[in-house]
Figure 1 (cartoon, one colour):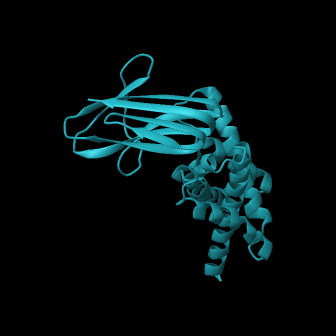
Figure 2 (tube, rainbow, N blue to C red):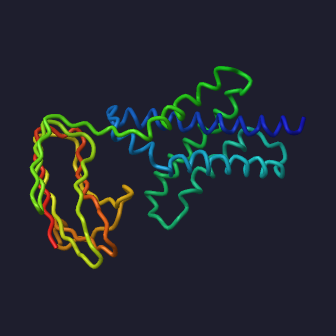
Figure 3 (cartoon, rainbow, N blue to C red):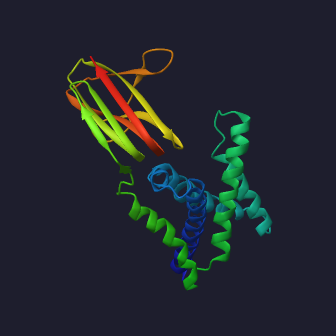
Length: 251
């Protein structure tokens, strides 16, 4: 009997976490204008999952434990503690405006966690629908949602030129380095219209790696190689139309 109560308690918290993260993902998908590439970047971040399923579950168990020492642990008192824990995760040396904004958002999703845990009973089949969105997002993570149309590339020994009709996502340009090499690079990117564009540097494992601005304008960067390997200059655009990209690199 005790084991059944423990299992039920865990399932209730998983339902609460799934409900909270489902609402979060739906809001973010709408806010990106249903852009799959931007949405994929969000759901592929381990921090989102760690905060809601990690911090959220741990917080809920701690609140249950605190409630054992509070006379008449009413729902109002639970709400107060869930709001508090929603703010606690942002209690680091940050500016007050960020703390208020981040904490308020954290409190909101913390209350969604509580609502899902309290109102969606694990014994009801419809409560399990809350797992649909997180599971779909997990299935989406391994795939690439970059979209290119009218794509034309020209390559030289130390440059790449690209013209495109439409670009939404990332494109990787490899640069090879040997131990001790310091490679400089610059990116020029123009398009007729679109939401945004950017540039970063990946290592061979597609993880972001360090790059150092060389001038005050931050239009020339450098990267230092400690071993022979390949890195990737990453150009990106969100809904870019009729664009041109030129990437130069040199030792």
